[in-house]
Image 1 (tube, rainbow over the protein chains, first blue to last red):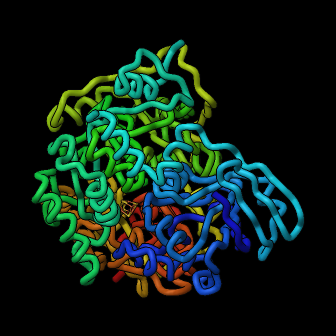
Image 2 (tube, each protein chain N blue to C red; image 1 turned 180 degrees about the vertical axis):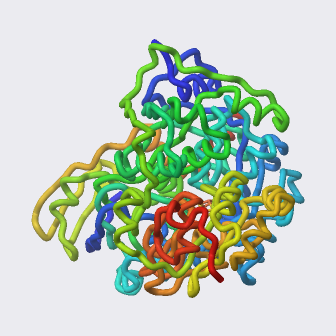
Length: 167
Length: 427
Ligand code: SF4
């Protein structure tokens, strides 16, 4: 699974209130939530993001509330994946469960400037900065998480598990 | 090898003799919770699973709390989705006027007891770890799977040990210990870890005060926060427990990833400045800055229990809040509201010029009821002060303990409570 798009850069400790404001938590529609993605950080973001673009951020991305509206809004506005120096625990877990690819790679983040063209291969965790001709390797997923990702998220994964249990 | 409390609880819930940090395990849960923000997604995901019934009706609880009472048609629709599912499936549902904020309501009603694994679709779920339980916040999708199967996957966290020696000073509260801790270890200082709180200062705290400590585990990135069970815990649990409990003690040779020690007697009342709970200063540092404020909020799952309200009322009794300052007081649950009414606290607040509301998260997440305008400053007893948390992204939120919040409302700026305590207002 490969993704390709322009980098949009953010700082450290981007919390879920910045990703999707509480005022918007009254819908679970991806298109509607996508329109307000990052509204409390950069109100212009949702308007300028192109399908496939990539969010690049510092440490502790997605800290704060457990709202999955954060993932839904990121997916909804067309972002293909998030690369960060680190993720908050619940955000990371929700992303795997919902099928939003998230990659942890501090070195890549340090070498990416806003607007750089990036290419990500999820199966190998390879991040290529095409603008600067640099290649990085993200932290690999646990095999168990890879199974969830390959199933297309936790719901599909669980459905299969329940089917097997039933025989 | 010895185990920590978190490890013992997880071992017992995964049918193993022993677990170690990093183990990926399937854990049986004793309780599953979702609120009005997270339940609608959980319900949708639950339906996709194709399962007909929840794993145990008594152990799945929905609590409308964030936008209660319905703010607009969209929130009313969300409540309807939740309520319809609850009716149909027979799970536990706390309607407005009978419930309140989940993290205060559920332990109070006896749904969580020592030794439980409790998963809630809300990041402040670790609050219940103050009862010696493993309480963990997750997203709606995990909760949907837990509702269906009674199980979740978990990675066993390493445990961070935090020991608070000594006795707290006159104006220092559990809120100050936890703010000071987050200031010291950072807002990602405990990411993926269980935080185990101990020490003399903890032992002398009421349950109300202990819940404030574990509530803010989320602000340090922690997976759960646990306080060992003692008589204070059991006195709280005995009259209300809905199921049996088990007390787990850490083994003497348990291993901890880090140990932090604090001198509680040296921790001053602490303020978290915008825009991070880790951006802390002591009240003496901040009182000199003459920070004028527009709003005070005394409420939230962090500090809106009886003890908090009593302390705030004690400061306000017989005084009026400052001109051009508005103060919103929200007891966390209907039961607390009733008790505050009986004790005369509601009268104290209203006589001082505060607006008192029935239980809701309200201003805490800027959803409704007291949203801030651009550039406004609010002193709040809640747990988060991120940009836009309580309204406009350029509104500023200062996190404090309840006496400090009450003192700020009277003075109209951030002051040491000593400055207003005992003084009777001229007006
Ligand atoms: S009071 Fe605030 S922090 Fe607590 S559950 Fe409600 S919104 Fe979340």
